[in-house]
Length: 76
Image 1 (cartoon, rainbow, N blue to C red):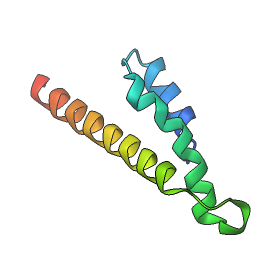
Image 2: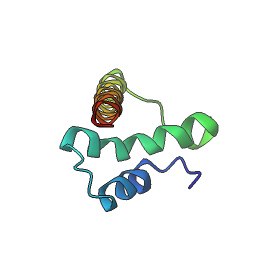
Image 3: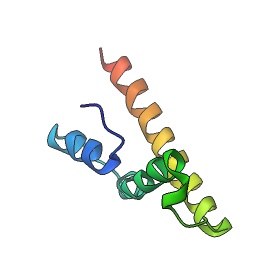
């Protein structure tokens, strides 16, 4: 489905029997940033610590997704 809700998307992945590492499962908290960046007046300023944490989480998701796609392609 078309959604910015990372928790919902991660649930769909899990429903397919694909194991989601804890570091990737934490990405559901990044959904808030999708809303805040679209509607800036709705959110609080983000601290440097929260920003660094969110970037680290996003990087973990990107690494995991890239590895998953590459592994899946090799198995074909």
